Image (cartoon, rainbow, N blue to C red; front, top):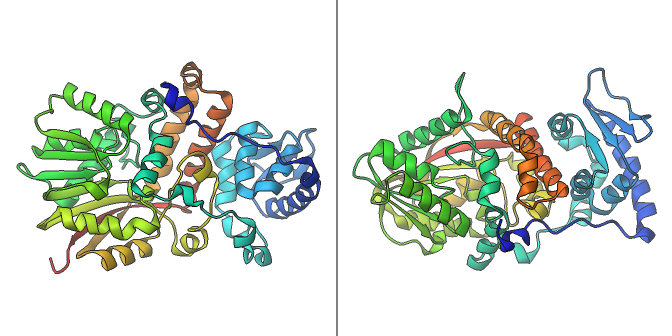
Length: 409
């Protein structure tokens, strides 16, 4: 791991100051008790007594230290995640515990308090705006951590997005199936020049050039991704057909037969959605097609949370925003001549994808430590992967492959 990467791990944990902790933790304890009584979840205190009994067979959450309520009172959902990072609560089945919360998210906070959401939830800071400079900094916080770290839990294709499984598939086979579905969606053919916005570590570019005989330009703003993608493309003997560029989507030039973008849109930011679709419109040839894969959330939840600053922003994806299907359609229609042709829902496959990643990450915890990362970091990533798995398992989150074509075609 580079010295730069070590400084990017996360902002660090804080304990609420003593003068405010008592009142806030008391209120948090009361509200938490009200919430968990309705959940299929058993909550135990450190002495083994039941805080909330839960139904038979329910997963168990163990509150190991009163700091849990301090953190919850001081920072709400951010504090809940921080408490797990600090070891203030534990469980033997993290995805199941988080699924209990995710599956009942609308009823966790009493109705009157939900109307005060803007008061008690922090707003997205201006420092995370996805300007060209801001986007590069936000992406670096996550994707430039360490290529070695990602290689520990991703499959051989180094793919960091939802796979598409059929019975008996390995994760690698399911990732290649996803690539093939997107190539089919836009009809990539020999001789086409394909633009990929969001290169990852080169998986889609390698697949398309190898199986479709096309030329590929793939763009990223992560230097670590750029370097490893180039190495992998050279090793695949595709240097004459695949070019990796370190370039923001706003600065891309040229004209392309096809465009693909796989789970990059979540990093664009609502403010820049029109700019993104206008750039795609400009880069795509008149008879071209574009396929975009993106995580989504229900429109009502998107409207309620789009300005909120959460645990994922603070520790994993600064500047990120998950759109709703309705918000995507509004943005693409307003900013471009592109129109949505059809959508394919693949969100049900993401829980399985994340389970593969989480289990591989946990199995290689010792190797994560050898990269110079702490146990706190390991708990943070376990929480992140399980948190996302729970979101997809309960359909709180979705994932779509979307075909975009010119209006009238």
